[in-house]
Amino acid sequence: MVVLSSTSRVQHSPAYYRSKRRHLQQHGAVKRRHAKTTKVNMHGFKQKWERHCMHLSVSPWEHLTSSTKEDVMTFLEWMLDSCRRIRKRSTVHAYKRILFQVYRKSVGIDFDGRANEEINDYINGYLTIRYKLDTSVNEKPVMDVDDVYLVQHHHWVHDTSVFPDERQRIQLSFLILLQAYTATRPRVLAYKQLSRSAIDDHYFGCGEETAQVDCADELDPKEDDFKTICYRDVQLLLLKNPEGGRDLPAMEVTLRYTKGWERRENPKTFIFYEVDDLLFDAVLHLLALALLDELGRHGVCELKV
Image (cartoon, rainbow, N blue to C red; front, side, top):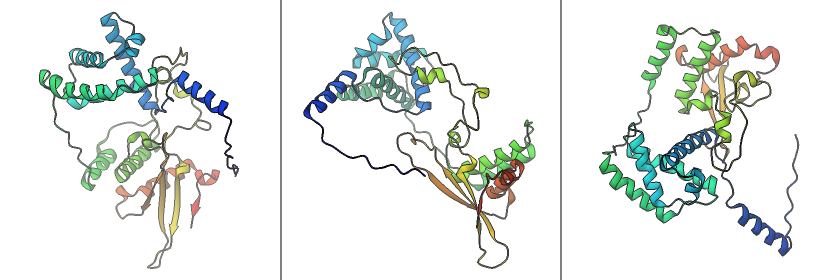
C-alpha cells in the first residue's frame, strides 16, 4: 500500500496571492461537481431553455447571462403553458432549482438571492392560483415484510419473464432483498446507462463535444468501474454458534455509491444473517450466485471465520 506524505504548508509571496485572486476573478466561481444523473437532468433543462429562447427569437446564451427575475418568471409560465403534465407546485420549484444550476454552471455566479425569494412568491401565489397547481404532499409508504413476500412470490411463481441466463433470476431476487433491507435507491445496486453526450453538454459554454452515447459493448467489466455494487463490496462470514452445532453464515454488504458520494464519500455497511425462510435469505442468494460464478475457484470470493 502506498503511503502519501502530508503536504507541507508554506506561506507564499504577496505576488502569488495577487495572481491567485486575478485568476479567480477572471474565471468566476469554481464549477460545482455534479453527479452524472444531475448533469443529464441539466442537459434536458438546457434544451428546454433553448426552445423557450427560440420561441422568443433571442440567443439562449445571451438571454441566460442577462436574465432577471422577470425572465425566470416568464420562463416558468411558458413551461406551464407548453407542458400540461405539470400539475404540482413542487414540480415548478424543482424546475426553478435546475435552471439555477444551469445558470451557475454557465455564468459562474449564483442567481440573486433576493430575486429568488420573489420568484418563490410568484410560484406560490400567481402561478399556483392561475394554473390550479396541486400543493399536496405525496405520501411515501414504506414496504413491510408482507409486501416483500408478495414481490418475491410473484417473482418466483407467477412471473413469466424469460431471462437470457436463469442466473439473473437469482440475482434479481437478491437485489430485491437488498433494496428492501437497506432502503436504498435502485441505481446503487444496478448499473444504468447514461448518455455521454448529455453529460458533456449540460451547461452553456462547455464547448463542442463529439463523444457519443455509451454503448454496452464499449464497456469492459474488467477495467471500468460501473459505480454500483460488486463482489468486492460483499464479505462472507462464519460466526460461531453460541448454542453449539454448525457455524452460522453471515454477510457484510458495503454500499459505496449512495446519493451524494461524489461530494462526500459515506459508505454504509449492512450485516445480514441466515433466516429460516429461504425466500427472505439474502445470504443464501449470494452463496448461490458465488457458486454459479465459481468465484471461490478464481480466488475472488473470500470467506472469513
